Each structure stands twice: as C-alpha cells, then as structure tokens.
Length: 114
Image 1 (cartoon, helix red, strand yellow):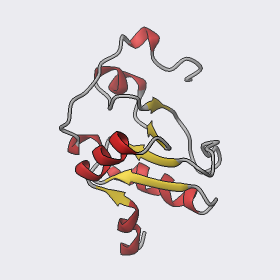
Image 2 (image 1 turned 90 degrees about the horizontal axis):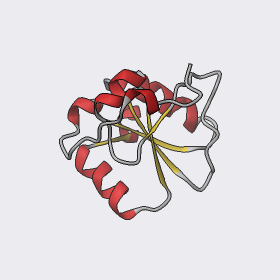
Image 3 (image 1 turned 135 degrees about the vertical axis):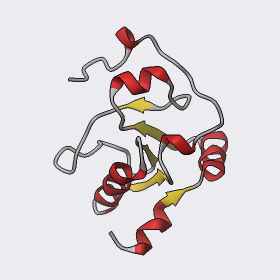
C-alpha cells in the first residue's frame, strides 16, 4: 500500500461526524461475529467479504469499513474504490473507537453469516 492510501482513513472524530450528520453513510464491521457481539459501533452491519466478494453498495452511499485493526479494512477500502465505491476505513481499527459500543446476543448476530 502506498502512503497516499491514508487519505481514505478516517479518525474517530471524523467517523463520528460522518455517522452523526451524513444519512448516506453505511458502516460495515469486518470482524468475527463473536467480536462484533461483544461490542460494535451503533448501526454498523456485520459482514464478511474479500476482494472476490465485494460489498453490493449503492454508488451514492459512503461506505466505512471497521476492522480489528486497519489492515483488512484498508485493503478492502482500496478494492472498493477500484470499483468506484466511495469507501473509507477507521484508522487504527475498532480499538481507536471510544464513543461507546453496543453489545448483541451472539445468537442473533450474523444471520446468513457462515
């Protein structure tokens, strides 16, 4: 990855601002369902995908990816951008989010998730 890839990274405050003020934002959580259940960003959607199975996102949406760390989400951001999807990632991953978490009973997490 090039250093310019950092331009697609969002800080915690930038992400919070996007979630609070942009109705076209869709937040996807790339972590394991067990980790998602223990705590995730409100309204984030648990998904699993790779470069061969990209998100089917609207071109009008702003996609923000959250990972355990930033490596996977950064890689997926670049892949989505190569398909003209307005994608970003949380710099540092979920460990850099301090604005509160929502927990879910794991039996309800990931319908259709392998």
